[in-house]
Image 1 (cartoon, rainbow, N blue to C red):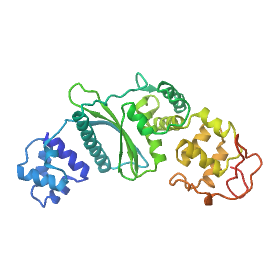
Image 2 (spheres, helix red, strand yellow; image 1 turned 135 degrees about the vertical axis):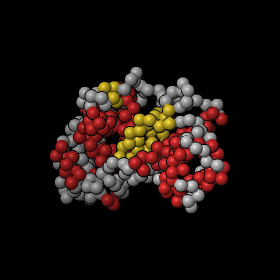
Image 3 (cartoon, one colour; image 1 turned 90 degrees about the vertical axis):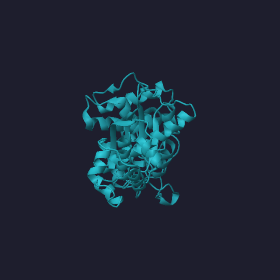
Image 4 (cartoon, rainbow, N blue to C red; image 1 turned 180 degrees about the vertical axis):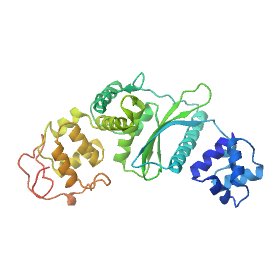
Length: 335
């Protein structure tokens, strides 16, 4: 229906009804546009052309529809997202999915089948149980214990659609379901922020995968988010593999070693430190000291991966790994 496409295009453009009327130089009123979107009236051909121009879409776009809709959108955001932000993102997702499915129809393909590793979303009683779930998913997908080289490729092989799109700065990503007409199955989609670093995009993909697998009925929203974070860390950085690389318990870790581990698992510096704590490799006091010293600022900016940024100090007692001795983090002190 024209009504649905018009509403989608307006939301994607970030226009209110009045904004769109103004962009059309008052050719039609905001009230009239509202009636078009509710299907109470139909725009003339001249108005349709003006709408398409103001919204920067083709006339074919407004006239053609696959009758798709979005449901269950869950945003991963650093702060509450505005209604306009959500509308823009949801519009972007639907437009992308329509193009994607149109190409599949032309090529006579059908990859829109989600190969879920679980019979149904898992109800967890504690956020920490998400680590066992991550290990279970790895086993069922036969991933072994090694780091995952390409999260996007993996998820798309399993039937999840992954969209890397420019999102508002406060939004890391979201997961949602696209409803299709008739008896066709719902299409699960994960969207990640194109402007985020590769490491943070990988973490977001794993986090959003968790939302497809975890039923938060028992946990609630807050613990559900914690469970998704635990799952993401365990899925990208398996405990047994990390303990083989870094040791089961460490009294010290050098900057260079942290960078090497970060490269190995392709995760952000802050996520690596949190995972080291979750796996019991380091203690709370070491984690706190790291974020107060060498890792200060790592939550918002990745550490520079360059030798000139490392502190050139001799090795400290007790700062050994299984492989080599490491330089301490700062001023001759261990992490």
